[in-house]
Length: 202
Image (cartoon, rainbow, N blue to C red):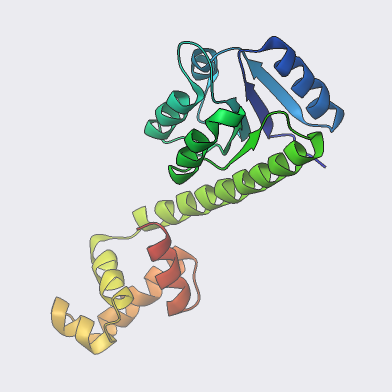
């Protein structure tokens, strides 16, 4: 069952290829959007896009690799599957090293493409869930007072309450009160959960 929020963005200057991919993917229940150039995709792109990009390596004007670099610079996390001709494999491998999700050689088998797309969409879901979790943690961190943050940083660094009290020149009771408020505001029950939350956004 495909996620209605996820769209497969097909970027290819070959109209026949775009049509055949649309037919294949829509037949599997996926939402598909097609672009005849890297620039038309960039013009349509927004931060709320979910899904993946199926991207031809060789296109006039802006190549697939150049689009990948531009998206990288924009901080895009949409997984990219490169579609390559036989001679483009070294380029595709270097794109993988720079963070692309996958590549597939033409001519390809439909089931092979679909399995790569399923993997890319699963990755997109994981990244999306992580971004959501991080933004909740960042929001909670902003609720801490300056003193609570100081206590939290020392506790997360492994300091005992007595050491925190000495370092900040406050009483143990005050440290305990701040620590309890930090745990409450951060929505965690244990020190291990607090450490994990703070490290995930650092």
